[in-house]
Image (cartoon, rainbow, N blue to C red; front, side):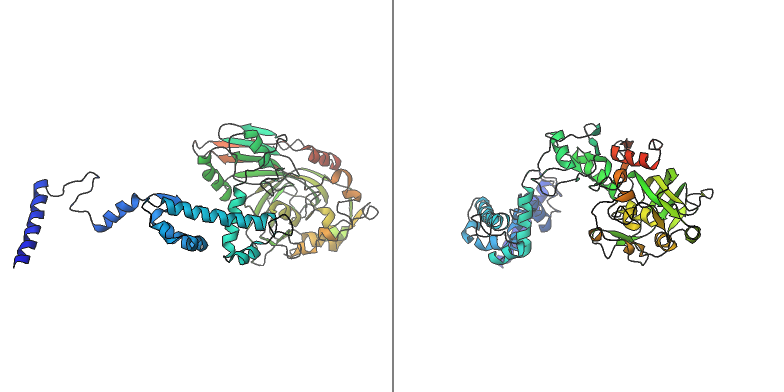
Length: 472
């Protein structure tokens, strides 16, 4: 009975104390004492727990979950950490510093084995991540993560080469990318890229990449200078709401009825023969792709003889349609300056779609007219005659037409020769990113920038008799 009275007494005292404070007394943190649960108290305690960065992967984790995370991320570090390190009464600082030191030593071993030499003395071949992981007794992913973090710790090289600035303010750096220049470097310490030049130009600021251009494509490129704008601008490129307009110089046969312009709705997939190339693929495996093309300058060319039989055999390729009912033209050997607007963003989309439509881009090493129809010797290229079968390869509905291309490494010469040489061979595809439009993420204002056609493409236009000024 005494025990029972004691329990009752404690409850009564507790109730009296609560009553004295008033029901639902609000504590200093705004929580009603009467409503607080054990889960709430745990949540409050967890919220006060500091975050630490995992030395192995860089992930921010709460200290209370750090040991568990380390067991999954870098088990080797956890196994080498003395148990007494976790018991020190210093709030975990000793244990954390110990794990960092162990991981730093591991990272040095990995860099010595993979970045320097197998024996660590400068002799022998560097080890692969797989071999390094086997030697150290850790998963391959652990080594690869360490190598990636070590690479990212190296500051990107800065290039003091000239940068053609189209527009610059506190938020954007817009440049005219020259041809034959990588958008970003192969290695962080190499430089020789558009990003390397932008880094030198902006000095202390970081120019963030939100899109890319092929190495051989010239034209408008934008870097974002404010990190707060990066995700919104990048989303416009990802969702294809940023509008891009290109200029392409083509030589081929204009599809029937498409002399002024046409749309190409043709899926794009892997080439199947040439590793780096792509192919129009209607088999169901290709990815949806759409390109709008406007012919802004056109001139029949004497590069080819086209027989009546060939003209009669010409048909409109599958997926190609005229942009208007009044858009009419007869098949002819044509040089054309084409204004191109890709509605999707597939690899090599413009180059593949123009080739599919019968107007491959001049000097394109993968899909150009010299690859499709031209021979490689000067004698054979003095004047080309297109047969009905050759033209059919261009304009048929055969979805695998690109497989008929001669891979570049099988050509007798690495560069176009004969009629395709000289001023028509500029060492890259005649493709230029002429205009870029996007919406400012904060103000909603439409931003538009343009870059004039480069000199090498102007020379091609002059050689083909095309007007290189009628696009602006």
